[in-house]
Length: 99
Image (tube, rainbow, N blue to C red):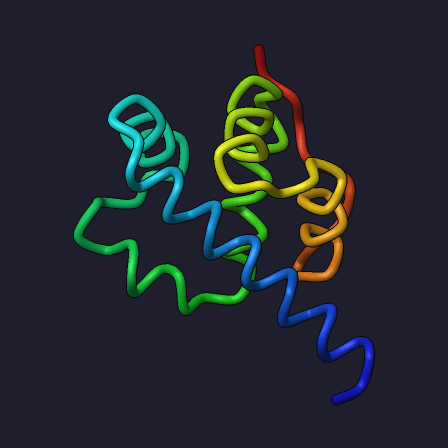
C-alpha cells in the first residue's frame, strides 16, 4: 500500500474515532449538531459526504479542551489530529478556534 494511501486511511480512522468520541459525549454531541446543523438521525448519511470527517476534526481542533480530552481518552497524539485534518478531503489549516 502506498505511503500516502496508508496516511489517508489513518487520517480517516482518526476522524471516525473523533466522531465516535463526540457521539458518545452528552455535552459535545448537542453542540456538534447545533454547529453543523445536522440532525442526529442524519449523521451516518452526512458522514459519507466529502469534507464531513474534516469538519469533525475542525470541531475538535477549534476547542482545545475537547481536543485534549479526545487525545487523552483515545491515546491519540493531538498533533496527529491536525495532520489528519490536512489529509482529509477539503482539509486545510483554516479552521477557526472557539473558546
